[in-house]
Amino acid sequence: MKPLRKGGAAKAEEAEEAKPFDITKVKVEPLFQDFVDFETFSKSDFRAVKIKTCEAVKKSEKLLKFVLDDGSGEDRVILSGIHKYYEPEELVGKTALAIVNLPPRKMMGMQSNGMLCSMIHEYDGEEALQFILLDDAIPAGAKLY
Image (cartoon, rainbow, N blue to C red):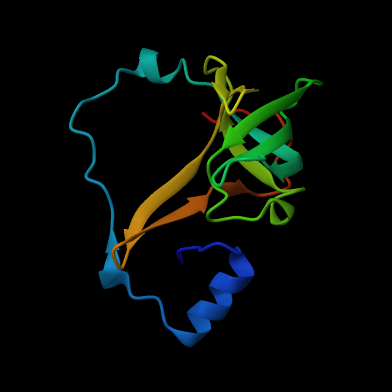
């Protein structure tokens, strides 16, 4: 996995060609020591979502506003603070992973209805983020088990 910087995958690939990825520079958070019982875990509703539109949130450097197809027949809006790592246009049409049963949360005056999943780690002392993208053959609304 290569860390992404603003500008997305194409710029990250160019940078990787110039400088090889060094696994010794990767740092991840330690695993939680507390267990979560299966009943608690099973209450989280993870679904495949298709990204219909994505745009930067005005007056925010971090937030992107996603309009998603979650398989329910109704659009779902989720805000995510990943603009440092991705440009909106490179995500439209992709399939992502979301938790859809979190309580709505107001961000920058807009309601966010869920959370899109990403992986974070440090690379060479800087935070890196990988947005979790799924195979586009997975239909909107497919449940993670």
